[in-house]
Amino acid sequence: MSFPKDFLWGGALAANQCEGAYLEDGKGLSQQDVMPKGVRGPVTEEPEPDNLKLIATDFYHRYQEDIALLAKMGFRVFRFSIAWSRIYPRGDEKKPNEKGLAFYDKVIDECLRYGIQPLITLSHYEMPLYLCRTYDGFRSRKVIDFYVTYVRTVMERYHDRVKYWLTFNEINVTLISPLLGAGIMTPKDKLPMKERFQAAHHQLVASAWATKIAREMDPSVKIGCMAASAPRYPMTCGPEDMMAMVTSQQELDYFIHVHCTGTYPYYAKRMWREHGAELKIEEGDWEILKNTVDFVSFSYYSSKVVAADESKYEMANGNIMRGLKNPYVPYSDYNYPIDPEGLRYILNYLCDHFHKPLFVAENGIGAREKLVENNGKMTVMDDYRIDFHREHIAAMERAIEDGVEVWGYTTWAPIDCVSAASAEMEKRYGFVYVDRNQDGSGSLERYEKKSFAWYQRVIATNGAERG
Ligand code: BG6
Image (tube, rainbow, N blue to C red; front, side, top):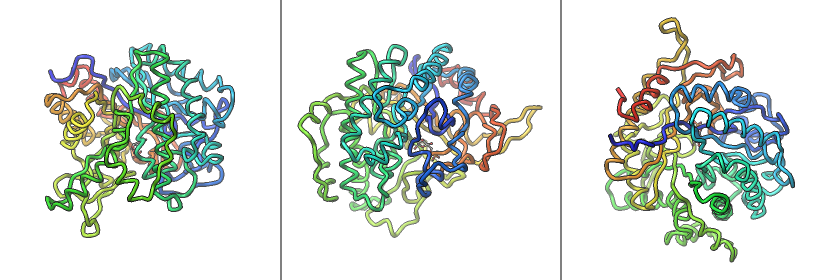
């Protein structure tokens, strides 16, 4: 048996992609409400009715039914995020919104009732829109204080019941998509890389504050960082491609390094120099950054191929990050590379570089799906999803056998939700189908897909039965 007996099997969701109820019980707006088409679409002045996230999959009203489904699969952990804008609707209030806090009380208690550990992401691509508009998100140091107030509030309220926390979802995405990652309203093409590095510094300091607060509140709490981690492969064994791979990989490692050591890595100076960045680091920042994480978590969807001269090659598709087409791996419906061995590789790589326990916080396959009748029940015959997870779990098991310490595996996303990159409902990742269509129609009823019973068996046998 390779998986430790207390291995945390489960799944992950994010508030803005599943809750809906966007103005209910005092909730404020967030950047997600003005991104109706996701990262590549326009930013609107006001929320638009065709933004599927306004209702999403209605987790806000159906959390009991959804958590019951997760419990039926045998989940040991449920990763979800708190919507910052439910707790502080504008972001700068003196007092939190009690109704927002009460909602997460109920979600946490519901998980615990079934013996499911909550794993909370403090900020998953979501910040009060007022902070985005007034301060340009994390471009301003001031937002660190608002984040700290928010974190203190939720940790005070929940720390006795929640042992696992993540500070920011995919923090390295700030360099690629500043609005999604750091709430920065200035359009990306008007925001030079040097500004993004500065915003990322503010976010790294904020992240370390969260760790400090968690430790002070309860030393038994486990707090981790979270990064989008496509391992880089060189297109050829030519030395220039190899070096392109190294420098591209460093764009991910940079963030994890700060979280694990409290210092910037040696190559940071080169990166800043190349982008003309002169980071403003205040005296007290170094002290705060010393609050390093207990574990490193990451999302893994696929590897990414890079080359010194990328114009010579065909690009592959990808969500937020794209690489070159890899001729050695198959591709999904969405033309994303499928590379289970890449998960073993990145687990070994991160273990070797950062010497911390690891957590696979997201892994999954998005597909266009239709309900069909099977044995008198409506379902989705998603054998490709079973294959995807089976192979990735096998790769993770090989990494554990290699000696890597892995605490858990939360699939993205156990219940269909609105996609992050394109804000569409059509791209489904769940073991549970939600009857909601791209045009907003649908009953919101839940249906177990074929993969539901498969994952249930995997968890029941602690990963042993994957057939
Ligand atoms: C991760 C995000 O990058 O990818 C999730 O943390 C997201 O929020 C997931 O949903 C899948 O991407 P998408 O765009 O297909 O939903």
